[in-house]
Amino acid sequence: MAAGLWAEARYNYAYWDVVRANWDSALAATVTATEARPAPNDLQFFRRLRRWGALLNDGQLDILAPAAIANRIARPPLALRSIERRPFIMDYVVNDEMRVARPERLAEILAVQGIPAAVWIRDSVLPEITATNEASRWERGVAQMLDGERGTALHLLLRLPGGAERGASVTRTLALTARSSLDRAALEADTLPDGVIWMRVNSFADPDVVSLFDHALGDAAREGPRHRGLILDLRETTWTPHERDQGYALLLSRLIDRPFLTAQRRTPRYSLDSLDWASSPPDTIWPPPRRERIAYSGPVVVLCSPRTAGAAEDFVVAFRAGDRGPLIGEGTGGSTGQTAVLPVAPGWKIRLTVSRDAFPDGKEFVGTGIAPDIPVDVRVEDVLAGRDAALDRARAYLSETARR
Image (cartoon, rainbow, N blue to C red):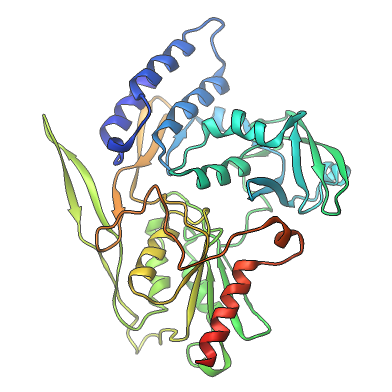
């Protein structure tokens, strides 16, 4: 199993040349740990593989365990977010256990099992998190900080929004392979009091995301004077397998009146004794024919964050290259590119990045992320006060644009 993972990563990973860890030494350590007595159980073995895989710094890496193992991994029914590298509860499933635990939205997790949260994340979580940069790694680490064997209990120390501290006991009941009421719709939309349309795209993987967008936008393209502009919020558009087969390009085509170029792509190509690259030029996104649909011509702002990854970054690349409007918020996750799912042992597979994506001019961004045109940091004091600083800045920008 470990040898198969090593071989596939060594041969197919598109960023092998920037791996800084001693991969061969890590293989030996993993094999030695596997052969130790007593032998690790299935979950311990899986976690060791994840820890090893994280050394690649591939933000799209996923070690796919057999269902019998994957279904045993769960988390409490809490949605967590990193704010200034502190873990906060943003939402939770209202069930019998949560009615007793009373976690409260916007409560900060101060400790897990008596261990300070920062130490717990640093020592127990981050070593297994795969990401291309530290900002993205920490975001993912907080989101996954309570993952573990299903049915096991955790004791949390919380600081409530009002400042009081108390404990809460929660159980890992929500299997990572199961859907949850915490899962958000692919697209959510509102028209704000100032006439701005605010659309949150939470997934490009949903095959209906483009039709949802068309329905939400309605007749705004024909009623320009009534609308001040569009805020396209990609802050929660995290990477989802196979989402590039869906509609990010179709959605972007609704916002342009001239062709836009997408990312260019290079794929490693091996011969017997050398490596070169097969290059794919950028594709072109075309506006819809006028007889079919009128593109939205009003001002557009895109919000981004370290959770913006995958197809969302493909969208941002074309949006930035076409100079359609500003990016506001924080830098993106730096995790995109074509992926492949490869078998490594009976029942086991690995998904990893097999292409290098860049802007149409060749500038690479995977690893660093895409910097916003207008940076806006997320602050704890704003979140606790109910303020969305990036959204407020976007609305101010559209207001300024309308006065010009």
